[in-house]
Amino acid sequence: MNKIIYLDAAASALKPDVVINAERDFLLNSYANTGRGVCARAAAADEMLANARATVADFICAKPNQVIFTSGTTDAMNRIVNIVRGTRDVKTIAVSDIDHHSARMPWENTVRGGHAELVKIPLTENYDIDLERVPSADVMVITAMSNVLGVPQDVKKIIQNARSKNPNVITIVDAAQYVAHGTINVAEWDCDFLCFSGHKIGSNTGIGVMYIKSPDGWAPDKFGGGMVQTISGDTWNIDTSPNKFEAGTLPLTQICGLPFAIDAWRNWYGGADILSYIYDGLSKIPHIKLLTRQDAKIISFVVDDMHVLDFGSLVGAAGVCLRVGNMCASWIHDLMGIPGSIRISVGPWNTMTDAEQVVDIIRGIVK
Ligand SMILES: Cc1ncc(COP(=O)(O)O)c(C=O)c1O
Image 1 (cartoon, rainbow, N blue to C red):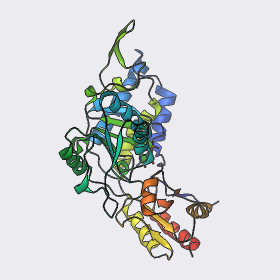
Image 2: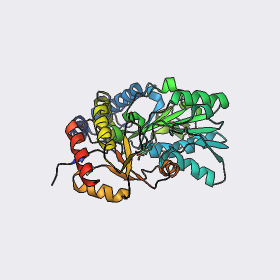
Image 3: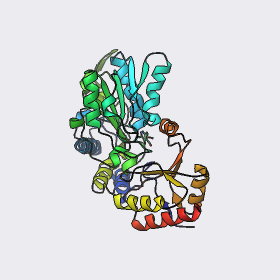
Image 4: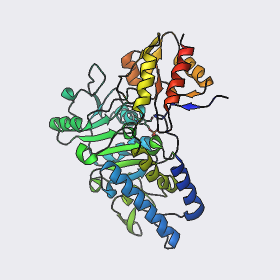
């Protein structure tokens, strides 16, 4: 069996020892639920939760009460639809063709119910969000970085331009891919909501973050244990954020690992040399058509006359793990006129040797 060359960070990152050890230690030595107990362990679990929230808040330049733990980006995106529609009358929703299914489908579902209309945010000829043509809408979904094209978008400017068209627009940033490659500053971007998944930056699955700029301005979308301040008979007072949006038991083990993942990942933010080597290597192989720019954070391509699934199986047999298909981003593939693509993405575990080997393997397959 060949050594595995894992080049699929954009799908899910491998987990560093610090995350695995922190979760193991929590499960073995400190496990308890939060927000309920008075014993020492419960107090320690509460402290762990507060510290994790503070680390996330610092990571995205937010305040701790603006940070809500979810099970991931998809969960957050679906919740945001319910939170926004619970309070606001939404008639127009702006989306773009670089969106992931998880960012756009929850809103498309609203449109299908006949409750609202979809508006497209135009793209430039390079498939970036066209800053000059940001439309007017009640809600705007902004993909901070496409999982196919890997180019960070100018989120701050997009939001400024959206507000110049409609000062009341609700802006929702999908940072699922962006989070792995750049600093998020929600205070500077001035978005209303933002979400990302921990598993894309080396934490466990089942944990994600939903940032809410004005948590007091929205009604909760979930009800249950832990989100009320007082309750008497059928009368209750809802707690303040974050409890307000965190009914039920949280994924505590995953939350415990998240700050370790964040610290490890923010010390890395690298891989440019590895990607650049692979990009150069692939650009010299006949029949490979690169879809991404040289400075993109991921590499996407297709091979003349070869189905992406066949390509995936062939490199897979040689030990290379990469992603093939429509990447849950069918709209950008439609726009490019292809059914799917092949994607290479890197993380802290990748080396230049991986880069050299993958180029050799692909050169051997695409003759
Ligand atoms: C841009 C983008 N948005 C949303 C998601 C959904 O993330 P998750 O599956 O962690 O909920 C992904 C996952 O690949 C993504 O790349």
